[in-house]
Structures are given as C-alpha cells and as structure tokens.
Length: 426
Image: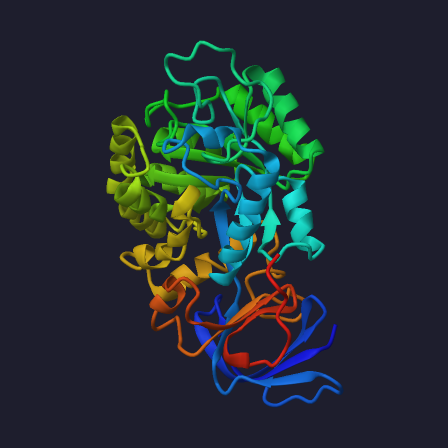
C-alpha cells in the first residue's frame, strides 16, 4: 500500500476541542505514521494538498444493530428471512454507515464474528466492528420477543431476528447466565450485552421493570472480566442503571431516566453512558406507519420526553458519554441526526469528543481510534468547513465529507480530491 501524505490540513483535535492549522499527516498502511506541523517530504508518497480543509478523526457509533434490516412490527415474515439475504442487506447497511462518516461501530446485538472479519479482510466495505453476538435477556425481559399470549418455551439459545434489535438469547439464574456469557465469548464476542430493564420495542415488559437479579448481574460481569472484556447493558430507569453499575457493568446504554444520585454513582465507579436519543425521535415520526402497537408507541413517547434531560444530568455530574443511535430497520438513515439532537444541550466540541475519543474509550482502543495521531488507525474525514463551529456538517448524513479514510484506505473521494482509487462497494 502506497504511503499517503496529506499536507496543509487543519487537524481537529477532539481532546482539546480545537483545530491545528498547517499540519502534515502521513498514512502508512493501516495507521498514521506521523503528524507534524508544516510541510514534510516523504519519498515516494502520494501527496494530497488539502488546501486548508479540516481533517478530523473518523466517527464512532457505540450503539448499532447492523443486522436489523427491517422493523419487526411492519412485517413478521422478516423474522424468518434466510441468513444469506440478511447478510446482503447487512453489507448494504454497513456501507451506508461508513459513507455517513462512521469508521467504527460497536454492535450491541446482531453482528457476529463473521461480520467483523469480513471488514477486517477487506471483503466488505464497512466500519470496523466490535461485536457482542447475541444480547442476553431474562425470561419476560427486553430480549424476550414472545407476546403475552405466546405460551411457547423461552428461546434458551440465540436466534436471528432481522426485524428487531438483532440476535437474542434467554438466560435465567446464575448458572444459565454464566453459560450464556461464556458461550458468546467462545463465539468471538468483543463485549457482552445484557438487558437489565424494560424496553420500548419488547412486548411484555414495562419500562420500569428491573431485570436480572444482582447475583445474575455479578456473575455476568465476573465471566466477562475473566475473559478480559466488559459488560454493556440496556437500561432506562435510574433504579436499573444503579443496580447495573453496582454490579460492575461498565457501559450503560440509554439511561433516559437518569437522576443525579445515579449519575454520581456512575462517575464514582467509572461507568460510561451511551445515549441514543435519535432512535426515539425517528420512531415517533415513523413508528405508527411501520406498524408499532400503540402500547409501544406510548413507551417510546415516555423515554423521548426525558432524553435531553438525561444529557443535562450526566453532563453536570461529569459522566463520560459516547455517541450512539440504536436505529432499527429502515430508520438507519437518521443516524447523523443524533448530532443535532445533542446540540440542543451540549457544545459542538463535547459532541465531537463523544463521537471520537469517548467512543474509543468505550471499545477500549483509546489512542488507537478517535484521534489523528502517530500510531492510531488511519480513520479520518475531510471537510470544507469546521464542525466545531457548525455541527450540521456532521449531521448532513455524509454529504459534507470530501474524503473518507478508513483503516488507511480512501473509501470516498468526492471530486477526485486525492486522485486515489476508491474500492467498489461490496
């Protein structure tokens, strides 16, 4: 792979929240080999003069479901699609995600090791993936998709749900929870996902339900730690969040009903928060047309009503937040709208930090992702404008990205700015 030397770049430093003008950035293989002030000469490198354009780290979405290709409610037949057609749709979703600027994504229910490896091997053009395989739920929990009139036995092993939030499995009791966690790790999980409270899309659990016992949660955390990984969890209420944090769960998804004492507990224990506010706004707009039952739309309205308040509480307490979206099915096109939603409460610099360095912290790749620095993976976006001043540049769905660099490869080159070949979409 030819070295690429970007000159005359204004490099966005998300940690400092500022631009560094007149920079040269060298890409060698999959990583940044050097970042320096002024002009630099590198023999045999392909030189790209950015003309003062902004170069920023690639974005990180810490809450996606790449295999969730259709909304379950609208057409139950999608629950039984062949894995081959699900895979084809998934590759398309992943490519679109990359074109929106997300060079890394953490899947929290759906993607398996094969999806991750397909990207790593260059078979598919998509974001770098961190996967959990199947999320784990108790009977009657957020991952149990049986209706209240369904008396069939719970699904004790994973199954593919291309219409909802990916693969799920049921585990009850400490022994089953340990087995489920160990099995997901055996299958290649980078992290573990538990459902520890009621959810919007599930049919039998009100939002206020707290799920899994303390012993079950501690067992999951212990098994994850034994394998040198961590647990993320779905939770809305302060009670569910507090129980999860006390058990040692590291990544708290959603947390819409967060309160001040629980936020303080998160800071004390070093827990991270991944809000996903765009999911509720998109569902409010399109849920009825997609067949969401009235009961689920009411639950969605409840979590939507307190979403921005949770950002205010977390920010005031000093909770580290990352960027997440949780968009199911056809709603994935709203992914970048999360930037403008957060801008109602947070500064542009804070939001960019959440979508870069904080995301890298969540996936445990700090210093390797979310930064333009020597030794980091060469993921970057080139823009004409400055997103620190105009967050709309990141909210435009990728239209404002002149160049997208992923794992050292130019995957988008609007108007031939780099003159380098762009791989065909797979």
